[in-house]
Length: 239
Image (cartoon, rainbow, N blue to C red):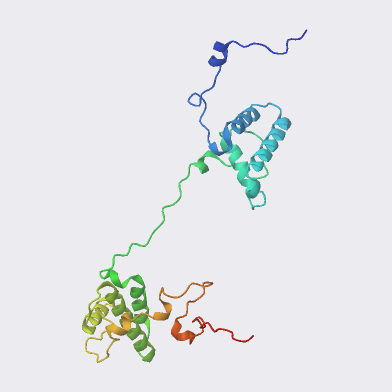
């Protein structure tokens, strides 16, 4: 009679347990330990045809773990690259895509060159400086004068957003003269900028008190003209 169940020795079972601290580090932990073992087994297969079949099977298993990415362009290319990375570049199979190298994997991206601008008057912002530079390139005329006036008014508005009190036009003209490198000179000009009240005036229609869309508006009794008042009770004397 064939023995169906074989009793195991408890000490042998405990001795053969595998702990993560003793296992090899996973290069891509998202796929798990079992897929890593499949790749390790495919790496040591001697027959080239069998090894290629095993690699294609592993690619199918990797794709089934991310079914929502199957139709994404270059997704298969990504899977093959990950297959070679997880095999520590030891898997020798035929790939439909260029086989990556270890040097490419260790390349670091180039450092992004962020613009480092440290303007003297930061409350004006960088866009004002760009506009002033453009105005310096324009020829003298009505268009340039209009652009310079718009820039000066915007500078005054930006200044008032930083200092809510008030600012004289002479201060704005001095800053404009300094930022333009002395090319825009309104110090002796008789032009007057918009006053503080007009620049800081808020549009009530665009305030936060607007009723959100879909929410019914509550009308006051003054506008209802008595439509919302209950009617007085009248006794019916008709028989």
